[in-house]
Length: 590
Ligand SMILES: [Zn+2]
Image (cartoon, rainbow, N blue to C red; front, side, top):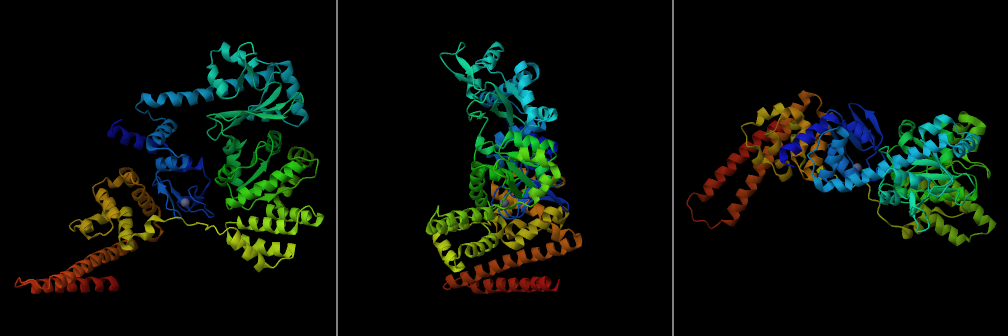
């Protein structure tokens, strides 16, 4: 595609996609003055460091320096190159892209996979509604308290207990059978009549939907006491179980609103809570909570409450989640249920209000961990030494020092240790540097030049003040020179598109940072003063540079026989000193 096309597409995309709406699909944003703030997904952020501006169509993280426009965000977040990001966004924005035959095949394959999943999902839903066996499944769900509304909302279906119901249906509709196999819907077998048999047989089917609202895979619960009780789709090009959470597509806004997520194990748990009005919930579906899950949840909220089944395996799964969360700087909470209870049975029994008060009084998971390990110590299942080692390892996972020192103190009290003892063990255990701040791009730059550029970007008409000076000669920072050079030749009415002129990350980040940090120069009068001062500083710095040059020439060319050599240089120097005095007076007297 040619250059002109590309620029048009970029403009079209930005006109049609609100950067706030788009970023909100991935992270939670809160209003802050004119802009929005959110937890930055590009570094291990503990406070909302990312600012997003609707009017400027830019985002910037003031901690790690990531920044750019909606396309830049989409690229970085989804790890895409520019053409792929453009293509995806063009689709969202409904902008026509000039077609390139090369990518059509892979793309259409992925799309076909999703289409086949939708096809299968419709087939399962029809089974639930229209068959005698489906009626049985429906009755079972009713005994578990699952209402009709939930079945509709979560598109729940049923797979008949026969070998090739779906396989036959797929081939009768000429669905590419290889792709259905890739999705794990059917399994190849020489013994099966058509060469394939159904994976899901005699199971209630829960479609697993991703954050783009596409059906990625399925989970099936047996209606006939088959083993396993729950069977999920295998991994496929569209289903990656370690990074998808059941229900999140439906519940993300409630999670965001409550700034809290309730994490349960099963489909039925999630449905029960949801229909009882507790909607900020996700289910892990039998897999252990992964690092990707933790990252995913952090995009939507800060508080995590785990409520798993009250049996031994539920308790162990909760404890395993602790490490994952601590590594991501999250201190999760836990509600531990009685042995024979699960979240679904509980909420059906006690109702929303009582359930919520349990959630509100959830205890820190680390406390639960300590109690558990103290039991193990007291009952003699573990030795004192191995327990101390375990505790130290756990404490070393904390990424914030406040929590770590709090729990170090607590562990010392609980296990009769001296705090100092734990600290010295901690030092040896895991001296990994917790690299928090990352690198802030602008920090190492000449601050006067940055301020100067910042005011200039916010008040384009100040350019008149410097029109006759050769500003590019005065600047030291090459990268800022590059930005100003493009800027003074650009269309000032569309400042947000300035960033599109730059391919390098550093320039893009500097622009987004300067455009999104304007609190100190919102008053034009003040901005004017700051502009004058920084400009004088820049001139001054350039004068000093000239002075240094002359000095070193006087030194190195001391034997120059040219008659007026020294006098000429000294005169030049003198002029510079006068200029300097003049400017300095203005700087300090302003
Ligand atoms: Zn960041």
